Length: 104
Image (cartoon, rainbow, N blue to C red; front, side, top):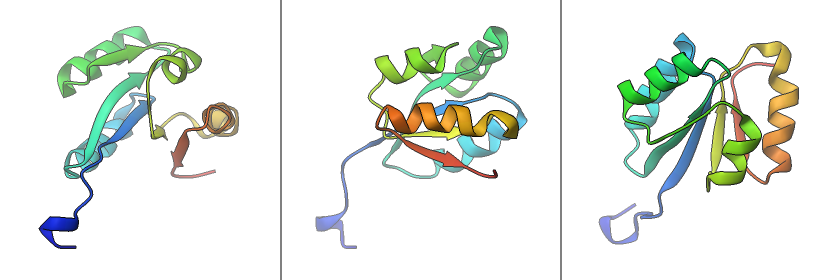
C-alpha cells in the first residue's frame, strides 16, 4: 500500500476481560496505528477500572450488553474463561460486532 491509498478509517476495539492476557492483546493492538481501544468490560469492577486507567482506555463497563449498546465497536476481543466464550461471542455477534477469540 502506498501512502496515498492507505486506510484512514479507525477500527474501534472493545476488550472483554481484563485478566493477564489482556495486557498482551492491548500491547499488540497499540502497534496498529488505525486501531483505537475504545472500551473495556469486566465483571470485576476494580480490575476493569485499573486496567482502563493504566492503559488510557476511555470507557469502562461491567456489563457486555451495555458496552455493545453504547459503543460503536468494530470488534471485541473475548478474553474471558473458555467456558463462557460461546455465550459472550454469541451476544457480540448478535449485536453486529465482530469477535476475536483465541481458543474454543
